[in-house]
Structures are given as C-alpha cells and as structure tokens.
Image (tube, rainbow, N blue to C red; front, side, top):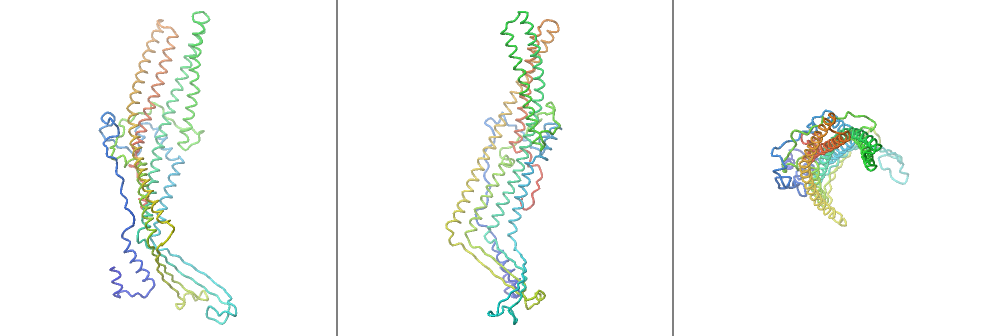
Length: 493
C-alpha cells in the first residue's frame, strides 16, 4: 500500500502503460502473503525406546553411526571394488538419476509461473478488400498491406498460493526421488555383498564337495574289494554305492548355484555374465568389528523409504491447497506494446505505436461438481499418504527387529557350527594318527574325513548367513546415505 500512496501523490505519474502494469503487479504481489490449504505438519514418530522385546539382550548400548561407504567395514578390497563398480555401472542407478533430474526440472518449470510470461510476435498482411468495401487503412486503393510487431506480457499473480502449493508438491516429489536413489544404492550394495559372499561360499563348498566325492569313491572301491572277498554283504555294498552317488550328486548342484551367483553378481555390477570379475575369497570378508546401531527415534530420519513416505504426505497435503485455489477467483494481467503500419519501415514511427493493458478476474460458478470432487479426492489422498507413512514406519521397525533377532540366533548357530567343525576336525586328526599307526581302518578314516568335510561346509554356510544378516542390518537402519553429499539444486531442497 505504501507504493500505491506514493504513486497517488503523483511523485510518479501514471502516464505510461509500463508503469500501470508494474503498479497492478505490485499490488497483487502484496496480497500474496499466504497460501490456501493446510500447512504441512510432519507426521509423529513412534514413541518407543527399543526395536525388540528384549532390548537389553539384543540392542547395543553404544550408538554406532553408519558411514557413507559402510561396506568397507567388511575389510575386503575386492568386495569394495565390486560394490563401487555396481554403484557406478548398474543401469538401475542411471534410471533413478534420470528420474531425479526429471523431478528437479519439473520443479523449475512450475516455478516459472511465478514470473510474467513475455512473448514477441510479428505478422505481415497483404489484402484486397474489393471495390465495395472501404479500405481498412488510409489510401485510395483496395489493395493494401499491414505490418504488425508487438511485445506481449502476461502475468497471473499467485494471490491465493495455488502455484506455491503446486511447487511445494513437486519439490516433495523431487525429494522423494532423491531418497529413492539412496534406497536403490543401499539395496544394490547389500545385494552385491550377499551375492559375493554366496559365490565365495559356493566356491569353497565346491572344492570340499569334490574332495568328499573322492573320499566316497575310495571308500566304495574298498567296499567292492571287501564284498568280493565276502567280508561284507551286498546290502552293505549297495549302501556305500548310495553314499557315493549322493556325494557325487552334490557337485553339479553346487556348481550350478555358483555359476548363477556369478551371473547375478556380474549383472549387479552392470556387466555381461561372460565378463570376469575380481572375486573376494571368503576368508578376506570379515564380520565388522562394530555393528551399526541407532536410536528408534532417529530411524525415521535415516531410512530412505520412510523419508519417501513423508515427502508423499507433504505432496498430498499441498494438493489440497491446489484444489482449493482452483475454486476461488483467478486474476490475470495482460499488456501489449508494439507498432502497426502499412510498411515495415514505418513500424518505428511514433505515430504508429500501439499498446493495451487488460486485467481480468474469473470465478468458477458451476463445474458440475468437478472442483469440489477434486478437493475431496485431494483430502482422501492425504489420508492415504498418512496411512502409507504409518505402514512404512511399522515395516521399518519390523525390518530392524527381524534383523536383530536373526543376528542373535544366526550368530549362535554359526558358533555351534564352528564348534562342530572343530570337534570333527579333532576326530579326523586323531583317526588319521591312529590309521598311520595301524590302529584304525581305511573305511573308518574315510568316514571321519567325510564327516569333517560336511561339518566344515555347514560352518561355512552358517558364516555366510551371519554375514548376510550384518549386511541386512546396515540396510534396515538406512545405510549411510545421510552422510553423503547430495547434488540437489536449490529449487528442489
């Protein structure tokens, strides 16, 4: 209003169309102090102090933050290289980056409606009006030409904040795309670790299976000799043949699983299955010295899927304001300045100048219930987003709890399997010593060896499951994306 008073006191005369346009635009801008519709309120986080029913036994007291490159905690340079290769080459990452750029540019495009739309036009006309009609321009001939050049400025002031709500909604979608990219990267790193560990386990197990087959073959040959001499029955020989067949059958099964793990790992890294990768050995992948831990109150700030759900609530909330803004008056301002003459050279003649300014207001009166239905739909969309947010949060807490229980129990199973391996190794070592001294038979030695190999395979498998649980814990707690720098432009922050 101060600008209006200054102009009305004739400190600046209202003699030019440009000044009139500026006055109306400034007055409208002064009205744009609020936006219709409800303001966004961040959903409440669950009020709990633990993830599990037995927090004292399963949850660490010390809070260990997650580094951005959290996979390095496993201490394997080959594993690090595989994860970084996947993050760089996996095509799904490129898709997510492209979707993020689309969302960011949509924000910038919508922000353009805050500014006047300026256009330029030029037209040339040559016409014969005939002898009956009077000439439309000065002259004595019915044939004439008309040159028109103009600059137009159109502005729709966002008085009630409909466009601001639309920009708010699009910003939320852009933020959600950023979190989607982060979630994809965390999942990709977890899958690479799981595939690399599985391949390393199967590689170890394949060697042990082949060794077990050789042991079973030797035992079968010994049984055949014993059967020929009449020391064992045909049933005993058949049982040993079944043992050999079972042991031999494990080799192609493990080999198939390993080849499929290699194919999966190659594709995760953006490579063809025919391309070779530098693979880590199982003994080079170590359980992290300190597993990550976080407070339940901060989980909603760390998990990308929860942040995505929160941004969807914000976007749905803003759409209510957009729907309300479409139900109330809309203002518009249009200004035109230019020239019109019968020849191009006369366009710059001051006598041929043309200008115009127009202001408009439109109020929907009847739309067959369309506008109210859209508002109701936007309100229902907010309810759905809030429900989806609650569901996502519950799932996040479930993931953490499931992983903590898995780590606890699979850790115990691994320790038991490791104890079984050590015990069977002692049996095999003592049996071998007895065999060397002639106190044990060859079948007894071979049986002890097969039992030891099976226990070792079980321990390796239990170790891989436990490693997978630790990677799942990193993922369930939200990975390390919060520590990384984002490349969002200011328009999408």
